[in-house]
Amino acid sequence: MKIKSVVKVMNFHSLLKVDKARKKAEKYFEYEEELTNFMDNVLNNRNLILDKKMLKLDKKQKALNIYIGNDLGFCGNFNSNVNHEALKDKESEKIIIGKKILKGKENVLLALTKEEYLNNTNKIEDILYDKIVNSKVSEINLIYNHYYNISRIELVKRKILPIDKKAYETSSHKEDFAIEGNINDILINMIAMYLSYEIRVATENSYASENVARQMLTKESLRKIDEIEEENLRQERKEKNAKGFKKVIENFIKIKR
Image 1 (cartoon, rainbow, N blue to C red):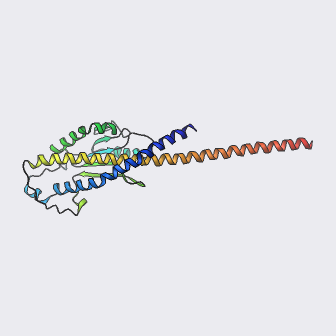
Image 2 (cartoon, one colour):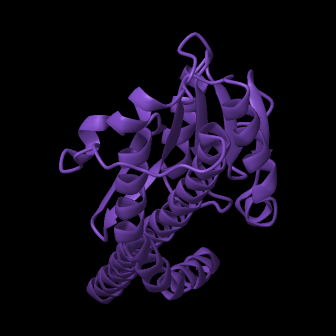
Image 3 (tube, rainbow, N blue to C red):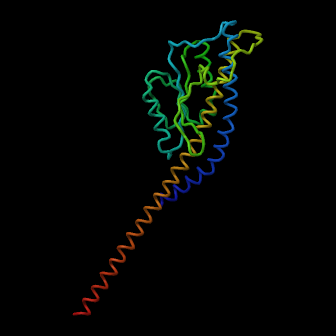
């Protein structure tokens, strides 16, 4: 079957990428936790909140949701689950990363393929910076398929700003900082860099999920194709045996006559 050859190529292609993408995603796990813990300790620091006029988000503004899908097909429900969440989201402003995610819908500020995102991260950073410096956002969330391990991939909605104080309960939030310059200017740049890094981590993580999903789906498709081919072969043998038996009966009848 011609389709079997195509699926085999897709499966092999996914296998080549799975291990590399998985290792890259896992490498970011520890970095991400350390960075979030650091930002949590700064943004939720009691001394800074009490002593300085800290930057605050406006809860009356819309949320900004960043939806991350993939650019390739043959991933089952990989994109449809993200699309479903995006279509339900009527109120928030959106940034879309991934060719297969909805385009042209309400409140979409920017839509990029994954390849375009890698070459245009500054476009997203500009939006984030504007939202933060002008207090035009209530919260920022990432929605994507999160890779936990080779057998666990789940759609998640993760809030990356504001950082939940309860997310890192080991932090004391009491460290004292010596500040030179405008604290809000420093924080805005730190937050913009932190958010940009979080989006990059989620995109890499989504890429690992994408390749695992493609590999699993193509493997299952090959199994189904083999079952169909085996069933067709059994049917051909059955028909061939039936024809042979019919011929034997016809010859036997001729001999009897």
